[in-house]
Image 1 (cartoon, rainbow over the protein chains, first blue to last red):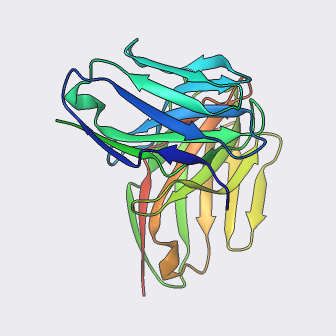
Image 2: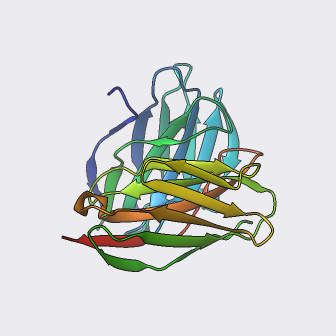
Length: 112
Length: 112
C-alpha cells in the first residue's frame, strides 16, 4: 500500500554532525508528526505539522527542527548530534490535526 | 503534561488463552486512546482505538475498554495466536492536537 515513506532507512553519523530525515505522508494526509523511539521504549513526540505550520512541539532541544513542504512532505533536522540521539525516528501522517496516526517504517539513526 | 503507564512489561500466554494489557493516564483532557502493535523491526500499526465518549469497542478478537473516572484503559485479546506475538503500545491524546503520549510497551509472547 502507498503508506508513509521515510528515507533513509538507516544512517550512521558521528558526534557533532548534522542529519536530515525525510518523510512522505499518505496521499491526502495533511498532518505529519515526528517521533523518537529509543530501544525498549514507546515513541516520544517531537513535532507535529499541519498545513505546513508547526502545531505542536515535544520536550526536545532546539537542535531538533522540522518543516513541512507544500506537498505535505516533511523533513526533520538534527544539529550537533549527540550519542543519545541514536534512535529510531518515526514519521506519522494523519488526515487532519486530530486523527488516527499512521506510521512509517522509520529511520534508524546511529551516532558514533 | 500527560503521563501514560503500561503494565505488564512482558506477558507470556499459551495459544488460545486471553491476554490483557492495562494502561493508566493522568490528564483528564485526553480523549483518544489508540493501541499499536509493533513487530520486531517494523512500524507501529494501529490495531484498535477508542474515544472517551465510548466505554468499550470490539473488533473480532480484540477489544478495548475505557474507564474515564479511573483514567485507565485496557486491551483484551482473546483466543491468542502465535502471530499475536509482538510489542503492544497504548497511547493517549488530548483533543487539542495529535501529540500522542505512549506507554512503555508490553512484549507479548504467545506460546504454541
